[in-house]
Length: 415
Image: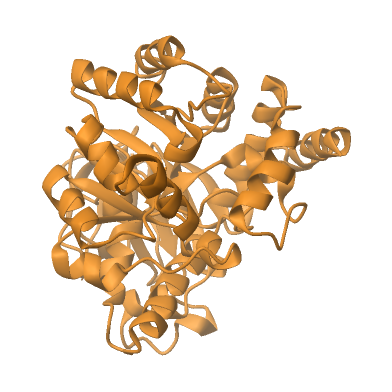
């Protein structure tokens, strides 16, 4: 059993207090005091123990295209650069490229990713081998995978390993035939399950959907029954008031991806309006080929800064709401209700924020510091499922040079 002591704790009410936290195996077993003696003492030394970040939208294996397909709008980037490269990927490639992404997640205090990609067996193996938590989401479209595979994956990977789970999903309206979307809606009804999809990322996407169907992507998904049990729209930039009412009614999460939206010039999601309407929020980085970093600190700051500019109002968005979205919101969006906060019985997916770095001093408001001046340099420790995987700049029991080498071999072959 590990006892975290002598520091601050971000508790289940999202308030900072001075207390002790006890972790045994994968679970938080006590807060404040414990009847049993701890085997190990983790001295926080005045730093902050908090729930980890969960990256609620990414494509981990797309590390292959980091800084390879830059400075293009979404459609050109996707069809002319990404799709041709993806056609060459193998399952082994997915394994090696994802292992690289996991290292970057850990340095950013991320304990879990919501990964939408292909070759789920290799992704699951990579995650389990790394001790990292992954929620996989199908990216079925007109060109890849099918409804029977989606159902097979759903049943298999929700019974695979404690670090792995699987969600129904598809790539996007503009790459997926209505018949396929209707089939996914039937699966959602069968399993009483939420559905996740790229939605309203660009203006051209929404305009194209209106031309095809006479309604926005969100309204189309709702009419097809895809959101009857909730889900999420990744990006959710070009959403109107009617779309947001559907989000609210159907318990759909808006997953914010400011870095990617900014880099691809896709637009700015109406975050302040979403908060005012009580829309559920989560945060993801998107993939490392369109962001190009997997850095949750940068995402939080960009969401805040871009929203202020968008609203021309320096007080438009509360940074604490954005921090909640990156932790609690992302966890709940991903179905990780058992590791969303620090509480007895919850899974120990935890991080330690170093408050002794210059960017966190002086201490006026710790939580605002994390959003406005915090960075990856403040992540002192990342714990997943009760195991410390990253601490003081070092990865535990991991040959990082081998991971780098294997990823580079893939990229050299693809190019």
